[in-house]
Image (cartoon, rainbow, N blue to C red; front, side):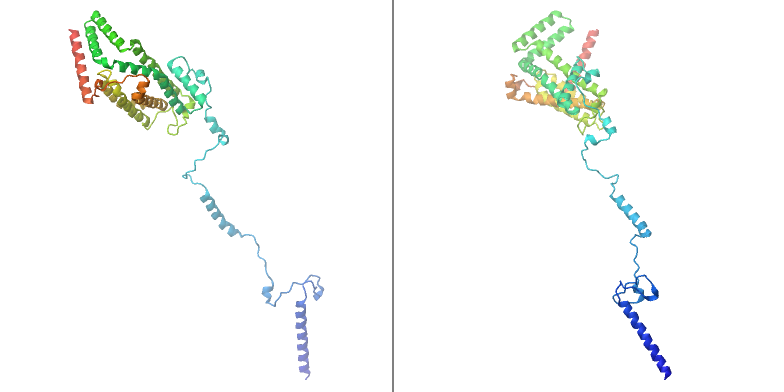
Length: 389
């Protein structure tokens, strides 16, 4: 009996103790713990009774572990390398203002020419080449054209200046066309008199030639002066441009034309010499019609010029690009002039007589020109042998 009471007493005490613990857990977090007289606040109770292991939540650090950083660094490096432009990549052609170029690049670009710079270099004088160079400087400084277009513009300007003399020469040639047979006989007579050293016969032939020129309304002096006026300008332009390229004038290294960037060097591709040769043959074909009607030998001379121009491509390959640009532009200008002056309306305006078709001689073939050259050579040899006896 007493043992049962003891057991009931212990069970009652144990139940009270459990009840007290459950009530203490239900208190708010602001309540203070009275166990062992501690002054520290009690831990906040969970809303639901859970195992003791889940009551303590360990907050993990937000910092990235070292292993993750090591793993992410190669990925970032690969992304940076892939985003960088490759050496073979073609960058867009964007115009860069000169004010943002490096000082070293700007220092390599020469400043434009000013009036008197060529004279200071000794390139402007009163010679034909010096006058032509002075004219090119005047054109370039006044207009601001690149040197590629300056040479072309100066070439066409020189042809415009020589245009009146070209017209005068064509007028004389067309006026003498009806008298070509008489003129040819007079030249043969003068050559025969010269061989015999017959001064009287030469004077007689010269007098007859003068009467024919007067009848045609052509001045011997004017016909003789026309080529001599055109020749200094043509040679002056050639040697004037050549001197600028040979010196060289630094501004000519920047031509302003992408296809021919440097006018002071030769063309390694032979493109300019080939173009010049082709245009020379075109010019010969265009002008042959007008020259054949003047003298019988003109057609053979033109055929021999074709042979010479074909072989001259290797000689022109040693010329500067600027000189070849002048030659090409000069040939184009002269060909256009011949085409324009062939038109009947233009000839009537400029008072150039029309050459009748029956006075024109068919252009000789290359075979006929070779036979003519052989006959001419044999005649010269025979004359030399006759004179030696």
